[in-house]
Amino acid sequence: QVQLVESGGGLVQAGGSLRLSCAASGSTFSINAGGWYRQAPGKQRELVATISRGGTTNYADSVKGRFTISKSNAKNTVYLQMNSLKPEDTAVYYCNAQLTWTGWSYPRNYWGQGTQVTVSS
Image (cartoon, rainbow, N blue to C red):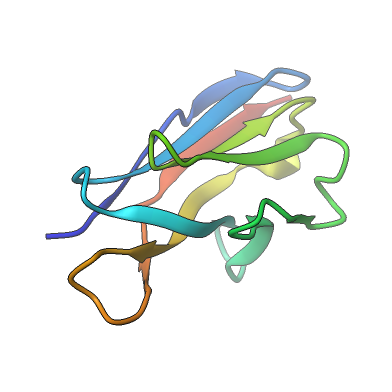
C-alpha cells in the first residue's frame, strides 16, 4: 500500500524554524512533483508551496522569503524548510505528491496524513 509519511511538525516559538519531511513508503515509488498545503481551524485548506518534476517552485505570498520547498530524488522525499515562523502559520500541514511506479501506466496523486505545526507568540 502506498503511503506518504510526514514528519517534523511540532511546537515552536515565533521566529523559530521547523523542517517538514514527506517520504513515499517503499523504495519502488518515485516522487515526480510535490507540494505542501495547510489547514488552520475553521479555514479552508490552502496551498503553501509546490515543486515540479524539474524543480520549479511556487509559493503562497504569505510564505515567500520564509519557506523553502525542495525534494530529494534519491530519498524520494519532499521537504519544507520553514523559517521566521509566525503564529498565523499555525495549522495542520499536508503533503501532496505525484508518484510514479514501473507497474503503473501513469503517475498517481497521494496525500499525507498531516502534521501539526503550532507557533506560539
